[in-house]
Length: 164
Length: 267
Image 1 (cartoon, each protein chain N blue to C red):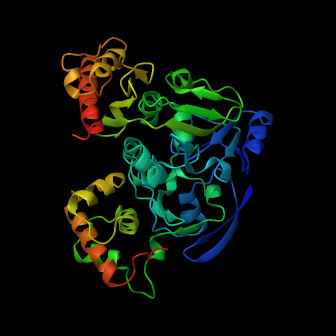
Image 2: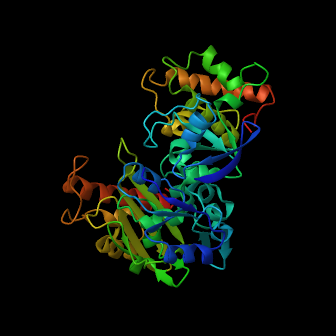
């Protein structure tokens, strides 16, 4: 066993874990934050995307121990005071989901895209940047619309870096 | 994943010590290859030495006519570096097209080069640009470093600390990504420095990255994609699998090389 400490959605957490614990296992099983999903478990689908020190990563392809001292934000960390984050709201408004399994990863990736590329995103950029997120329901059309609208809404709400 | 003991050194010296003292130890860089491999139980090191806190292995600096990149520098950092973008824009573009954004936030140049995946992008850049692989023990020319599929000149206990890229006059990398995995089905890097032209091919060779001598000779006469018309890569020694046969890969080498030259001259 090994000790690990990190900040998850603003809370300091410490645990004694098996070194082979993946970050996604730590988030789901240890922290009981089950919004982060395991889809493929082979670093392809992006359902497990979270932010580590402000950068989007696939939490199935990182050891929890590699996050020692890090600041982790999951989908549960986006909404504040019961109000959805603008990107979450945009996914709801534009129906950017069907079954919803990929949605947490899509939204965490989308917020990361806005953090890196700004609030005015064209369709080509969004589709290219969503390379690492797979949706098996929708064909991406409404997801792309949601990301575009969510990006603009983030500018209006002054929440450019809301996830961190 | 099988159980292992985890180590987190803070200097290259500590990491090298752990690597030599501990049985069956493996270095963990960005983990974008090693961790999936361990999850599939294709690798089961008894000791994992995480290089994530080794500060001296990070960073990018311009040293005279070279760009020196720390082994633990991520693909996203290379792609976004103003130093690399200005000095070797083709290298920044290559890094910005590896995997997906999340992989680029974790994967490192040192990990990619040390692994020498036959479909990885960085080995082509190292070979074409005549990079020097700097380890805790010595400096190795890229020509001597890549020795076959997943095989390199690295010895037991040797750690890549930096990679130095001499600035080419012109350079670019073009790849045809596998539509599913996005790994290079064929990737070609061309670099012109002074009168020397080097062309390196990844993804295609059965023994990993290699230089394409015929294209280099043709481009040395005149650095234009027109020089490559009629220069055909040989199918012998190329990979053939469910994704593409050797003849198709040979064809793609020519196409990617011409596109890379066009990109390098700004067409």
